[in-house]
Structure formats: structure tokens, C-alpha cells
Length: 297
Image 1 (cartoon, rainbow, N blue to C red):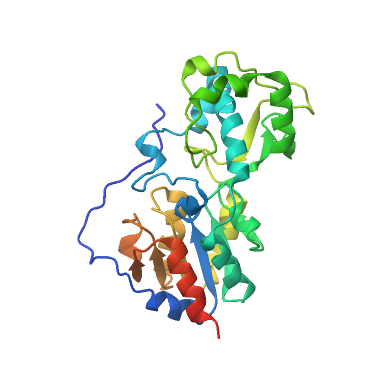
Image 2 (cartoon, rainbow, N blue to C red):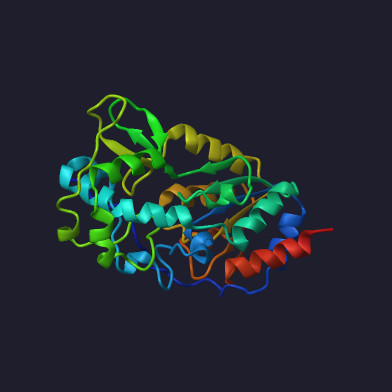
């Protein structure tokens, strides 16, 4: 029997309260060799809600799981209809102060690697180089049959051609904000007539966004790259992640096991707090602007 992946967790308490002082973060980053592990909280100031914060999307929205997506045509129809609206909103989002601050730290050589759990591409758009997209990217689409990778813009064009008038008809259902997994909430009646297209290369293959769904494993070679970054890190800086899912939490545990300082900046508790050397609770844009100002010569 399949079980649903872990989407939430309950803090156990027993830890001292988080600080609002980023001094320890400043010291660690100024020393160089830090690796960043970022989550959805880094993109909230770009208008993309996180999953678990005060206004997180999990309060109203249950993300598609891998098992659901591959298990039936209706699930794929529902996903692509909702994503058709959500992807365009996601594509309009722009990097915020937090993304730009991380890119600045990379450019200065103080951050030697960035592992992002986000699928929005905003960290790269801010100018950070060699970002490892732990959970993939919504800007790409993969065929589950032939393996071809294609651009999401190409699929957007094909879906619009196959579904003339869909967006206008669905406009009255449009959610105020896109969800972190790239869709919007639509009732079933709004998606029943939506037509899903097959792979343009092989003609029959099922198309899936090139992202790791809940319940799906991160490719082993990608995990190995991340582990190498963490192995070489002087400090691991966690930004805007609740660390609820093991895909990100394992790197916190790896760093802590090796004696590498773990510094967490997040609004709210995280599942990795017990391994943290220092925890800061501040809005990320403000905290990271301050960090950049203080580490610059």
C-alpha cells in the first residue's frame, strides 16, 4: 500500500527561541566557503507563497504527488489545466532582494555553492551561477517514454492551441497567487474539457514537468552533487526552508554529522532546528540585505 509523503510536521519544542541577531551568520559567511540551501521562503517576496508559512499554500492546497500523476489521465488533465494558468504567473515572477543577495555572495566568492529546493528559476535569474536545482525546474518538460527534454514555453504554445478559449473561460476561477508547485486551484468543472497533448517527439509519451513531485525520488546523481558541495562547505546556510521533507533535511544532518556549522534563517521553526548551530527568525529580504552590507569590505 502506498502512503502519502510527509507534507507537514509538528515542532517538538525544547529548543531555545530563535534569535533576531544575524551576527553569527555574518561571521560564518565572511569567513568564506559557505554553501546555501534555499527553500520556498526565499521566493515569497516575489509573490510565490511558500508551503508551510503563515499564509502557506498547504493551508488550502494539496500538491500533486508522483503516484497520482502517473496513475491516471484525469490527474494529468487536472494538473496541466491548473498549471497552464499557474506557469504563466510563475513565469512573470521576478527575483527579490533575497535572491539578489545570494547572487552577490556567490559573486564575491563567499558562497561556493547554492542548492535550491525551489523550481521557479528565480535564483538563477538573479545571476547566481551553477545553482543545483534539487527538485528540478518548471521551465522544462520531460517525456516519460522517450526522455526528451523540451522547453515549457513550447508546451505552453501547444496547450493553448489545443484549448482555445480555456484561459478566458477559467479566468473567473483564477487564484490570487500561484502555488509553489506552479499551479492554481481550479474546480473540477473548469478542467473537464481541457485537452492534454502528448510528446511532440515520439507522439505518444506522457509529458511531465521536469520537477520532483512529492513522493518521487531526487535523481541519485543530483543528490551526490549536493553531498559533495556539503562535504566541502565551511558552513551550511539554510534560507527559507522548513526542512520538512527529507530531500533537504538530509544535507543538514550530513553537515551536522561532519561538525560543519548549520545556520538557519527562516520565519518559523524548522525540522532541522535540532541540528542548527544558530537559528535566526527574520524576513529573508531584510536579513540578507543586512548580511551583504556587513560582509562587504
